[in-house]
Length: 160
Image 1: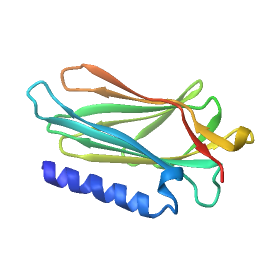
Image 2: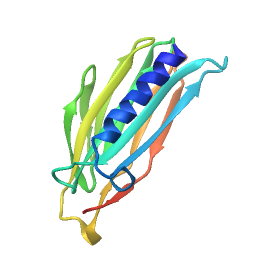
Image 3: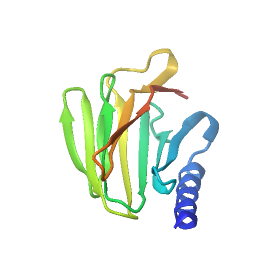
């Protein structure tokens, strides 16, 4: 299972990465693999942020969650202080809005993969030739009703 998960993760990174012309300046990725209290694979997540090739002031965010052997509930939260969210791919997700936060939630069954994609467009013209993605978070509820919160800080990109 771990080899298949790792292979899928690398394939996703390669596919996203090779579609960009200059990865260093236009793509950012963060994620983590989490073990449970028995040192077994619990889940893995990755968030890839890249500038839209046709409109560098627009960001495309891909979020992938790979679940372990237990049912898990997740919620991804994107603040919208400086930009607007447009959901592109939301399979198995329930979309919601809480004031300045766009949310998507799902129950992820054992050994399943959830992938979501959205665009983030600034509400005003970028200042200093930079576009920034507001902070976001991932909430993970495990089968013991424990909640973990993973924070993603503001990320800036230079508009080309």
